[in-house]
Length: 139
Image (tube, rainbow, N blue to C red; front, side):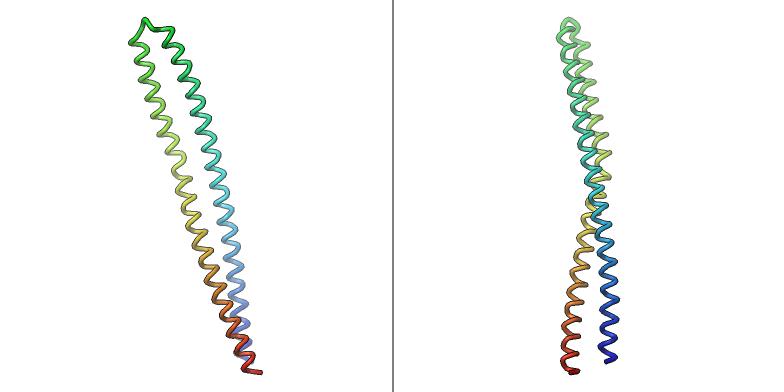
């Protein structure tokens, strides 16, 4: 009877721990969702910047046609455009990198928590079976 009571108490404690892990998992899922939203926001911003730059580049090409007699000026504009594109790519890569890293960390933490929960559930199921067997033997 005491062993059964101890098993029940241990099982209840482990169920509480599982509930706590479930809360952590939900928090991890929420952080993951927020990271995805931030990633989408960055993606939208990158597309906007690329479109904006595309418009700037179009304007530069029109200027080039108007300034065909000043070939050197046109070469310099194109060089500047390439530098701007390179700088934009660098800025976007720097902005997106921490969020990608955080998302990977969240995915890893989420997997670890799910694996931990599965292990705890397995252990509880085994304890329930052992408890049933102990109960049957006691009867």
